[in-house]
Image (cartoon, rainbow, N blue to C red; front, side):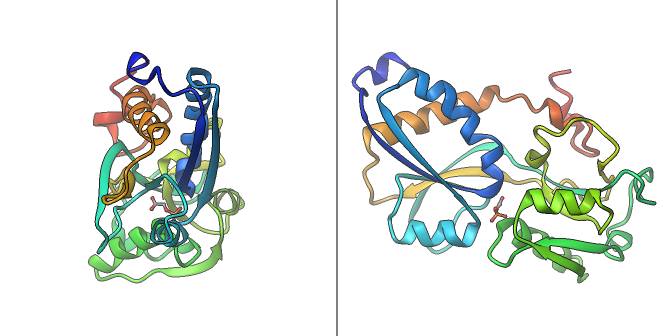
Length: 234
Ligand code: PGA
């Protein structure tokens, strides 16, 4: 990999990623920038709707989304699992229950991301397919704000398991064991098919596809229903 990219000495890399990829991409930039110290990186972190707008306006070299854009001619590379889980406060009455029904879960007050969020879209679709609508207690504009509100006992929420990346194991946040969860999704690296990737963007994409295979999903170990993948690296 390194020898292929010997020529990459300097240049600019403009990345735009959906909010949950911020738990993963900045960390990867460390070793990438060690390999290619001359590269100047900018990283935009925002929600799905704004990323799609940036894609249409051709503002960045490479995008990371949780669901490929529809109706756009894009090159799309899936690279890592991105399961969505149900979070509750440790003291929640459902915290110790097994195999909670979706119907039962839908009775709980929900904390939702803002309109335009891919996480919200996937959550709404999931419940709509079951013929259920959610009781939205509050809308919050970030994953971290939702985690805090869940920990504070305001309600339950569906978020990417990656948002738990640096969470110390504590009783504040638990993953509920709900039928049909986790919702299995992936992260996708995306760029316009008619756009020639810059040498730098190509180097980063190769690095991403290669390095993401090594990512430890160890913090996902305790996700009910996710054992097959999560417990591999015990
Ligand atoms: P969001 O996207 O940050 O817009 O919620 C996340 C996703 O689609 O996985």
